[in-house]
Image (tube, rainbow, N blue to C red; front, side, top):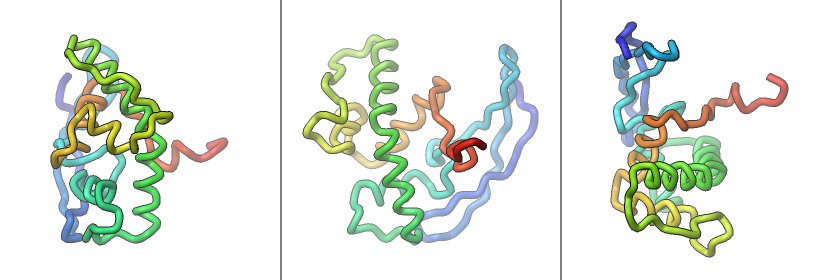
Length: 154
Protein backbone atom coordinates (compact mmCIF):
# COMPACT_ATOMS: atom_id res chain seq x y z
CA UNK A 1 0.00 0.00 0.00
CA UNK A 2 1.10 3.53 -0.62
CA UNK A 3 -0.20 6.74 0.92
CA UNK A 4 -2.07 8.88 -1.61
CA UNK A 5 -3.38 11.57 0.71
CA UNK A 6 -5.63 12.23 3.65
CA UNK A 7 -9.23 13.15 4.33
CA UNK A 8 -11.09 14.47 7.34
CA UNK A 9 -13.45 12.16 9.20
CA UNK A 10 -15.90 13.46 11.80
CA UNK A 11 -16.97 11.43 14.80
CA UNK A 12 -19.19 12.09 17.80
CA UNK A 13 -17.98 11.30 21.29
CA UNK A 14 -20.04 10.19 24.28
CA UNK A 15 -20.33 13.81 25.37
CA UNK A 16 -21.87 14.73 22.02
CA UNK A 17 -18.78 16.69 21.00
CA UNK A 18 -17.77 16.29 17.37
CA UNK A 19 -14.10 15.53 16.73
CA UNK A 20 -12.38 15.70 13.35
CA UNK A 21 -9.66 13.18 12.56
CA UNK A 22 -7.25 13.28 9.64
CA UNK A 23 -7.41 9.80 8.07
CA UNK A 24 -4.78 8.50 5.67
CA UNK A 25 -5.95 7.31 2.25
CA UNK A 26 -4.03 4.32 0.93
CA UNK A 27 -3.92 2.77 -2.52
CA UNK A 28 -3.30 -0.95 -2.85
CA UNK A 29 -0.34 -1.64 -5.14
CA UNK A 30 -1.89 -4.97 -6.11
CA UNK A 31 -5.56 -4.21 -6.85
CA UNK A 32 -5.53 -0.41 -7.03
CA UNK A 33 -8.41 -0.01 -4.57
CA UNK A 34 -8.43 2.90 -2.13
CA UNK A 35 -8.58 2.19 1.59
CA UNK A 36 -8.87 4.50 4.59
CA UNK A 37 -6.79 3.83 7.68
CA UNK A 38 -9.31 4.12 10.52
CA UNK A 39 -8.31 4.04 14.19
CA UNK A 40 -9.88 1.23 16.23
CA UNK A 41 -12.42 3.49 17.90
CA UNK A 42 -14.14 4.32 14.59
CA UNK A 43 -16.58 1.99 12.85
CA UNK A 44 -16.81 2.26 9.06
CA UNK A 45 -19.83 4.31 7.95
CA UNK A 46 -20.86 5.15 11.53
CA UNK A 47 -20.70 8.71 12.86
CA UNK A 48 -20.38 7.89 16.56
CA UNK A 49 -17.34 6.35 18.20
CA UNK A 50 -17.54 2.59 18.71
CA UNK A 51 -17.71 3.01 22.49
CA UNK A 52 -20.97 4.98 22.10
CA UNK A 53 -22.56 2.36 19.87
CA UNK A 54 -21.32 -0.42 22.13
CA UNK A 55 -22.75 1.26 25.22
CA UNK A 56 -26.20 1.55 23.65
CA UNK A 57 -26.17 -2.04 22.35
CA UNK A 58 -24.98 -3.40 25.71
CA UNK A 59 -27.32 -1.38 27.92
CA UNK A 60 -30.30 -0.22 25.83
CA UNK A 61 -32.23 1.32 28.70
CA UNK A 62 -29.26 2.55 30.76
CA UNK A 63 -27.09 4.66 28.51
CA UNK A 64 -26.24 8.34 28.34
CA UNK A 65 -25.43 8.67 24.65
CA UNK A 66 -26.83 11.86 23.10
CA UNK A 67 -28.33 10.29 19.97
CA UNK A 68 -31.88 10.59 18.70
CA UNK A 69 -34.28 7.64 18.68
CA UNK A 70 -33.97 7.05 14.94
CA UNK A 71 -30.19 6.70 15.28
CA UNK A 72 -30.58 4.24 18.16
CA UNK A 73 -33.13 2.25 16.14
CA UNK A 74 -30.73 2.08 13.18
CA UNK A 75 -27.90 0.82 15.46
CA UNK A 76 -30.07 -1.96 16.85
CA UNK A 77 -31.29 -2.89 13.38
CA UNK A 78 -27.74 -2.80 11.99
CA UNK A 79 -26.47 -5.03 14.79
CA UNK A 80 -29.36 -7.49 14.49
CA UNK A 81 -28.95 -7.74 10.70
CA UNK A 82 -25.18 -8.25 10.71
CA UNK A 83 -24.48 -10.27 13.86
CA UNK A 84 -24.73 -13.67 12.13
CA UNK A 85 -22.48 -12.44 9.32
CA UNK A 86 -19.91 -11.16 11.82
CA UNK A 87 -20.00 -14.44 13.75
CA UNK A 88 -19.31 -16.28 10.50
CA UNK A 89 -16.47 -13.93 9.59
CA UNK A 90 -14.87 -14.19 13.02
CA UNK A 91 -15.13 -17.98 13.03
CA UNK A 92 -13.59 -18.08 9.55
CA UNK A 93 -10.73 -15.85 10.69
CA UNK A 94 -10.21 -18.07 13.75
CA UNK A 95 -10.09 -21.16 11.52
CA UNK A 96 -7.65 -19.50 9.10
CA UNK A 97 -5.35 -18.54 11.95
CA UNK A 98 -5.68 -22.00 13.50
CA UNK A 99 -7.01 -20.76 16.82
CA UNK A 100 -8.17 -23.43 19.21
CA UNK A 101 -11.45 -23.59 21.11
CA UNK A 102 -13.61 -22.09 18.37
CA UNK A 103 -17.18 -22.03 19.72
CA UNK A 104 -19.67 -24.03 17.69
CA UNK A 105 -23.42 -23.50 17.31
CA UNK A 106 -23.42 -19.71 17.22
CA UNK A 107 -26.26 -19.30 14.74
CA UNK A 108 -29.34 -17.17 15.30
CA UNK A 109 -31.31 -20.33 16.09
CA UNK A 110 -29.49 -20.59 19.42
CA UNK A 111 -31.26 -19.53 22.58
CA UNK A 112 -28.48 -17.02 23.25
CA UNK A 113 -28.89 -13.35 22.48
CA UNK A 114 -26.82 -11.75 19.74
CA UNK A 115 -24.57 -10.13 22.35
CA UNK A 116 -23.98 -13.48 24.04
CA UNK A 117 -23.04 -15.14 20.73
CA UNK A 118 -20.59 -12.35 19.90
CA UNK A 119 -19.30 -12.41 23.48
CA UNK A 120 -18.33 -16.05 23.11
CA UNK A 121 -15.98 -15.04 20.29
CA UNK A 122 -14.59 -11.66 21.36
CA UNK A 123 -15.50 -11.49 25.06
CA UNK A 124 -17.86 -9.09 26.74
CA UNK A 125 -15.28 -6.76 28.28
CA UNK A 126 -15.30 -3.13 27.12
CA UNK A 127 -14.21 -2.51 23.52
CA UNK A 128 -15.90 -5.70 22.26
CA UNK A 129 -17.19 -3.82 19.20
CA UNK A 130 -13.64 -2.83 18.28
CA UNK A 131 -12.65 -6.50 18.53
CA UNK A 132 -15.38 -7.35 16.00
CA UNK A 133 -14.68 -4.53 13.57
CA UNK A 134 -10.90 -4.59 13.30
CA UNK A 135 -10.32 -8.17 12.07
CA UNK A 136 -13.30 -8.10 9.69
CA UNK A 137 -12.23 -4.77 8.18
CA UNK A 138 -8.58 -5.81 7.95
CA UNK A 139 -9.41 -8.98 6.04
CA UNK A 140 -11.63 -6.90 3.71
CA UNK A 141 -14.94 -8.54 4.66
CA UNK A 142 -16.69 -5.44 6.03
CA UNK A 143 -19.99 -4.85 4.26
CA UNK A 144 -20.93 -1.35 3.15
CA UNK A 145 -23.83 -0.22 5.30
CA UNK A 146 -24.35 3.31 4.04
CA UNK A 147 -27.96 4.02 3.13
CA UNK A 148 -27.01 4.72 -0.49
CA UNK A 149 -26.03 1.08 -0.83
CA UNK A 150 -29.20 -0.17 0.82
CA UNK A 151 -31.80 1.53 -1.36
CA UNK A 152 -33.56 -0.58 -3.95
CA UNK A 153 -32.83 0.11 -7.58
CA UNK A 154 -30.19 2.68 -6.70
